[in-house]
Image 1 (spheres, rainbow, N blue to C red):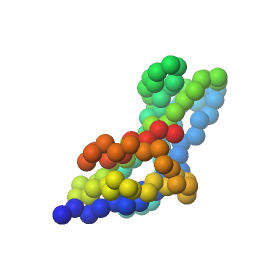
Image 2: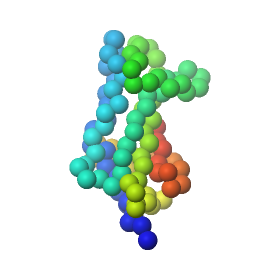
Image 3: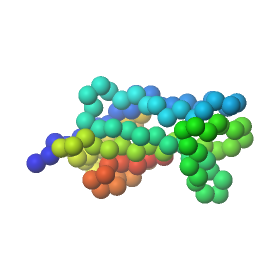
Amino acid sequence: LRDVIDQIRIESLPQISIGGSTAPIHMTIPEGAPYSVQANWLLYGGDYQFAGPGGAFEEGKLYYLEILIKPADGYRILEDVSVLVGGDVFDGITMIGDLGIWCCL
């Protein structure tokens, strides 16, 4: 029997800064949370392309933040999990089985 995760909290997200800065990917989650998060920036231009953590943001382009949430060993994420981003409920999630959750902001 595995422990379940019924709420996921992401306290802060990386912010876009136009003008030569690199794409940040750091996010803050509660200390000791039974899950990990990984961020990737995607550039939208008819389809999504990986923008990478080392790239710079360009003015006039549309970017999305892809977040992958993975449970720690011995845990599983409930299908009706509540995801809070900066204290607000986020509904745009996709379960990817035991691998965790995918969402795009």
